[in-house]
Length: 527
Image (cartoon, rainbow, N blue to C red; front, side):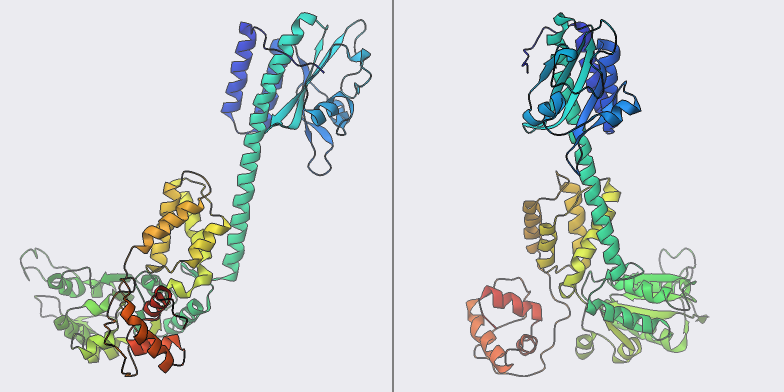
């Protein structure tokens, strides 16, 4: 066993090193780059029959994984146990081996190159460990014929350099293989989960609460009655509306959406019913409204609770008469439209306060489908996160992954913004992550930032029981505003009156269940 010092490099050797480095950087295919290096050693420096010997993962036996100038028989014979022969000893000790004449070395195992291949010609053998983290992971070996002593130092030095480059190529291969396996496992897991879930027209999930809503939507789809979708912002009301349309007999006709809250009140009538030329300033031509555009199909009225009161009467007339008049017109236009509405408000409260017509409410509220918030669909969070992760990776050309701890952190968060918020968070993680695996610190920081958002509950549970509270406490607050200590007695009293039923206690207090749970945690009340 010989340790070498750094010799003076000739221009030829320096050029070979440069070319080998280019090979490593040119491709992620280790076979192509390693065998290219071995070819350089043979054709440019006369170091022949080069090979890279690696342990078999199943039994640890060393075998020739990459080579140049070896026959198939020589490759098949090139098997060594750990510690066997010069090659096995280099692998077990991590030391460099230089055998000036293989015919005079008793430990040399002549499986690739016999001791006297050509009469009166000396054959030398050099074997160098391929190291990773100071541990041998393979052996790089070459032969030199003629045994010129003056070449040994430079030969051994160049082989050591090449072994380092080969080690880098193998490390890149292992990283790529590891990443590929992880992505395949994630894709397989995602497909398995998708097979177990209800996935209809983009609605993904397997939780019981979601399946109940989907089943109600399926039943509603086969009829022509109006449907009201009720749920918090971000729960997928438009997706449900599209699902109902696509599952109905109107699937081949238009699906038209309009958001009552997004259009100024003075323009909403024209958007819905259309207008005639000259009906108002800027009406330079007649224009059909959303009702006419949706004829034969479905009109989805989002945020119906924000529709102006005077416009509600005109909507009611269209629903009753199946005809409309454009703004500025007098001609009756027949329309055949199926109506689906959505709201994140309690329309009953709008009716009681005089802001929403009772007769219109009953027209729209024939079938009412409650869409569950994401915090009530804990089983769906991981599935949705992986779905959004896969989509965002493709969109942004990244390969970011979430480990199990990261997924668990996402499952524990309350998601006041529901599915839309989860999608935004996943996209932010994909874009901003500096590594392929999202760190736990990044997840924690992102969710901490999200926790600063105050979401006002727009569908609160209305109190059903009048109870005299021990102190006058105003509970008409947002769920994440500062909790006051004087709320404790009222909450404890309400829990006592409801015999520990938190849902009933929340109704008594006039707050949502989420508001109550938030205060129970903040005030350390064991309900």
